[in-house]
Length: 413
Ligand SMILES: [Zn+2]
Image 1: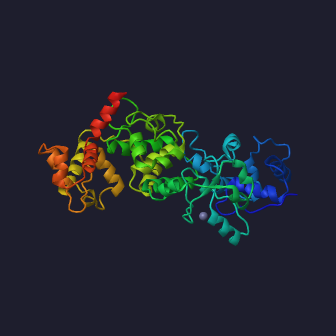
Image 2: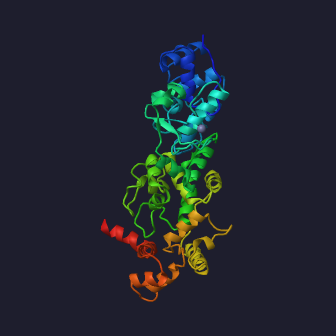
């Protein structure tokens, strides 16, 4: 006899497993799965023949593919893949994939929201583990905007969140604030959630082609070989808050500028990419103006890599330079609906060595920079003429020297 339960909205597979275990008085996962197998009439089948996630789907009364798509993290982990991309998520024919990867997690640890527990107790009479909280990079509840709590014990999924919250740790405010206030992180999370709703993976070749086209247009390197073009891994390090980036790829933020980081720079050229989906998401969220643009490009079946070289790239750069001159170096005066989103536009301009000449309280960074670069004045004199603090002028000069900065770093190695 098996007491069956209906899976709740956005409930993680392990959460459902834990609830079934508790209500049926089973001591562990193995006992519960054996009970479901006996109830379903397959007591002798091995877990390779009848994987855990298939047993959970049977207990729920849902079609296997529907259960996988709405309750497991498999559609996220396999959203972009080089391994059998034509196989739909939860396809019952691919037992090996369901056995090995069916109920794996997308990140280590268990994550929960205090307000969701209150809301679920009120609405459902119980608390449960939400799948969206377990995705990489999620530090804040998407429903309540509350900082999440966590523990490092994956076994806690078998208990109710209400039991675990007492011993859980709140994510640091530093980390949560960085995730709340960064547009690129918002795009990263939005693209990930949208890809997870696809019924089948996207071939990594298609994603790679979309990303390479965009990266080439921006003037970045699309391979790991020698080149004068800057690396996309350096661009990511500048785009994301390091405290957050460390939670996705721990050693990316500490790499030396100009040094190749194969898990990022390499995914644009490897034909069989072992990179986890987070690497693709980090790049896509950083280089596209909006999550919608990224999804349109990655999902497009009609894509071919058009490398922008020579004249095309020069025209783009010349156009940005012309606009920069017209706006007298003030980035916000260059924005318009026909151009990129402000943060991305600023990043493009910075890669060209065209810093934002912002003025405050009667100062003129334009006069200071013109004095230094055009009139040959000293740093101190230029700062005085523009009424700008010396360290602010120094910072602008460093931004203007981005290309020599990258070259010097390569010489150092
Ligand atoms: Zn919540």
